[in-house]
Length: 395
Image (cartoon, rainbow, N blue to C red):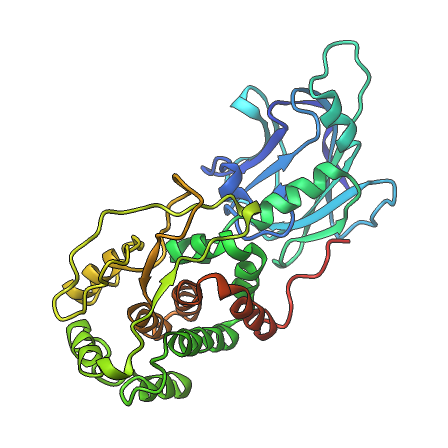
């Protein structure tokens, strides 16, 4: 065993970092993206972000480099593990502001990292440790060569660790960040479910996309139309969507043609649970896309702009209906926020056909939540069943 660091190190903002090669540490959101553990952020390749209970001052700190996984000392109150592949070149433990650093000398090979903490709550309560004050929290950082594995929480005791684990689980993974608007919107409704979808794999993601498209069409009352039903069947069989899907003007004309069979239904925008702190953002009424029926007196919602726009009519439709991606602004009264259920259900079908399974699931589900309005909890309950339950409780 090698011990490159032992004693006390300075922390500020409750943070320390491991940096390698030309990689500097990332911010909190990037470092913990997609993790279940919030004490050692390893989402940015070649870097770690370590959290401490103490905000400012010196904490006890030891770094060990092992040949194999060491035994876990039961004295530690909070323990997590992550994986790290250091970049070639320097590899150092760095204090906030880069005022000091400690050489670790790790080779550029895959490592498992165990971060152990004792006294985090006492450190948080003290907040700032000045000269002559006793040490209240201490930490152990262990490295050994091992293939990459998902991050894990091995032990949780303190409230501080519980807070940071909760913070980490709210952060979108890189894959979720790539989907952008839909993932961010759904996180306000059920963050744990979004992360479960991210981990579920392509088969379940496709099943969720199909479920969302079906439920959206059923709620909108268009699932029995002779050109919508074949599209849902095509989704189920993994075939391309048949015409008129892919042509929003033709789809609008089909809705107009089937007007007697299409419920003239507008939907009140779904509101996330109060604890999510989400609000809806009003947008001025936009002209209806060519070939599509106007939404009448209903007030449309803004929808996140997507790079994969297939036509100008598609872009105009997205500007007229759908979920807002922005934060909460203004009133919590949703009574005036209404939009066309049938048009948004068609959007769910189109989104469910995306090439990337995670994108298909999240974007179709986002539209389906919109169609379901305040009835969305039943839909999300079905999705949770498809995902086989959420992440296990933290030990």
